[in-house]
Length: 433
Image 1 (cartoon, rainbow, N blue to C red):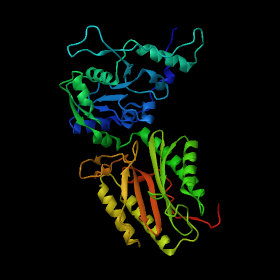
Image 2 (image 1 turned 90 degrees about the vertical axis):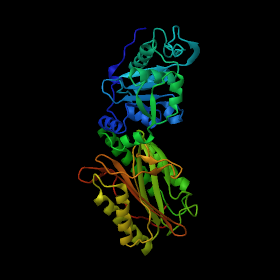
Image 3 (image 1 turned 135 degrees about the vertical axis):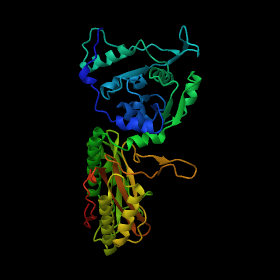
Image 4 (image 1 turned 135 degrees about the horizontal axis):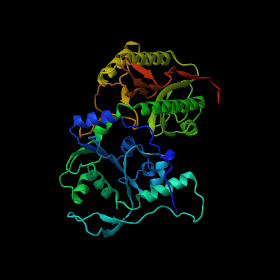
């Protein structure tokens, strides 16, 4: 059966990848290329999202990005998911499809032992004489186009990608350096693999135009879902009820809720209590990019102390946003916010966590050592087109919980809000259900 690719179904989408920044950061770290193994990094480099990424199966997909233009960027993926290129087309010019290891060696193997022979794959069965839809023709053509050049395993596909990009003797960054041992076993004795966990994060901190637009929508979807949860709150409500509203409303808008918290252990009294402030801290995904938001509510008349503290948090938020500019250090932003909150009548306040956001909740380099917590954020200077959250929670046992958090885009002159900045205390009338 003759098949042809449907070009409109496989048109590469706008790149998430900020390629000029990627090249600059690779040059800064002396890297000839990058290997992505983590789902968020494969997606970022290639634009392709596999079913593997949701189920967290490791080491089935790789993306290779050489620093030198003209060398082929490559996506290594499974034959059985080639169909997904019609949903997530890649800009990368080279695709290596991976079948299964047959246990047999290729005839005439190379001096390093040769690449194992891949099991034959020519796509899913096709009903004889049937008229295929445009999508089915595309799927069939994808299988046909890769059938005669399959890799036996993902690791062997990665090896081939590195050789084709001229990186077999290069200095290459990888988010999981364990692949170095496998590459050595496959004969790449000259390659140098550098831990690039934070290199990827450093690149991803500054968003491309495509990413910014996705994050605008992600922020809106997450906020609308959170507001629906706030609207459902009433005296006696359980957190499970409010959490369910958030997740359902997020899915209705095409996203996927991650978590919505009130305190890390749930509502202090297991239900919403009149007069006790409680917070909403919602993190959800839209097209795999996170939205993050914080709000505070109370049932019944708020106390004078609660109102004073909320106004102080708002003053801290305004002071922080007024300080935002390219070059401002994260540590300086923290100091500015805390000082403003305390001066505005909330001397007990002590913690604010500005964080970059994107494909991860904390989309910036982290400090990883025996002396850090593993997710502790390194200090950094703000740059144009960074998307950040100013995260301002406060927990006090026996009193209540407060939160303000919105998302902003750093611009050359300051900032642009991606969320509503409607951070006023939400007062829920007594008796409302």
